Length: 163
Ligand code: PNS
Image (tube, rainbow, N blue to C red; front, side, top):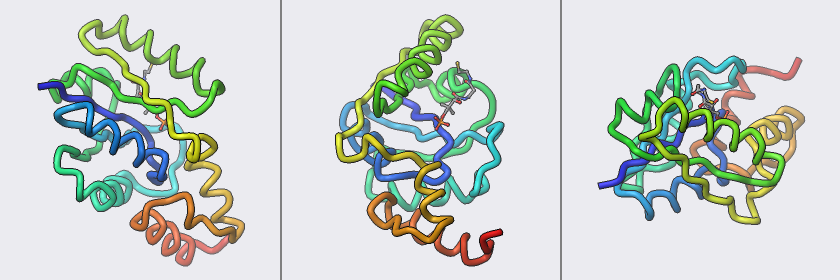
């Protein structure tokens, strides 16, 4: 049985993330999506909100679980008896950072390997940050997000008017 963790900020989950989760769930017996709690970034959604959005988004994928985590991704993997860290690679701009993380993680935890899935071309440009920016300025983000994330961002923006 091979279990993978898929760590990230997911603020919020995009269709690109969902594509990686869905394809990963076919490769691995179980995929645990880990929502990072201690991010230096100040997220739009609380960790509980991000976990709930992801749970709703992945509810039809029986071998996918979602939880919050704090600290190192490799520790999160080990705590869950996972031998793989799954990450998506969008473009060459992701590569340097992702390679550095994967190599560092492998030195810290040689029993955990990073596996990359290249994102599908149609999602190669997508990022949560860009989607939030389009949303803040009133643009249509319906093509970028799974329905639970779209609903959540719309209600968040209604309760948090633009400054
Ligand atoms: O969605 P993101 O923001 O690209 O995810 C980045 C993430 C969460 C995978 C990365 O920041 C991470 O692994 N953070 C946990 C702390 C850690 O393990 N740092 C060492 C990586 S070399």
